[in-house]
Image (cartoon, rainbow, N blue to C red):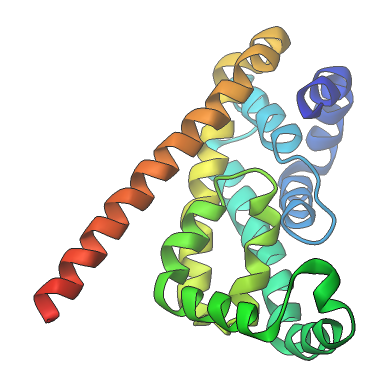
Length: 211
């Protein structure tokens, strides 16, 4: 489990982050957001503990963590944008039936992202596992780069802030983190669901007004 890993290696992680400083946070979060997922909890929570100890500052931890997340997400986005579509189309032609995929399914995904890419990208940054993958369909659908960057940074910034606060207040209380982190993530999922419902309701009302 991520948090058992976190608890076992917290002292080592603290030493590494102190040694590498903000660059360590930046590169760690960049890796976490790209094709080599690493638990962001194991990077930002110890950094939050170091903020409480006066070893780091809130602004630079937040900046390094959010920027690293954005750059890592843009790596996935760029690969999907420039290389992914041709590969996926050829893959579907050869193996699509094995994975219940076809070109119509991909077109539906593209159309979905053209209509709802902003909210999906934003919320995706708050959901474990999805965080690393959400950049790929955004790239496949050729989502506007400015919008992708803005909503990725917005969602990643909130996630970094949450982990910083946890690290600041509970960074030396490993048992509390192990017990409560799953509940925090579940709460985020519920909040995300509420946001989606509100978004759909507002979108539907807007469509009705246009008609």
